[in-house]
Length: 73
Image 1: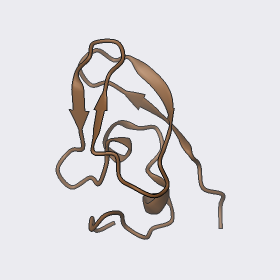
Image 2 (image 1 turned 45 degrees about the vertical axis):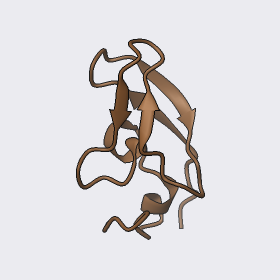
Image 3 (image 1 turned 60 degrees about the vertical axis):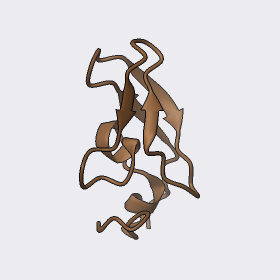
């Protein structure tokens, strides 16, 4: 099994600003405020968190193919 990646680059769909963030391993992150344009990002329908919607890497539970917070994966 591959190692779990704990960092992901979130890219704001509004302004394109990208920032590397550390993903939580014990909870979903439903919201994220872009530090550049201050837009409040939220997970897209069908995604469990902002990392699965806007990140370069899916969240740790989805990487392990476990599903996350009730989302089917």
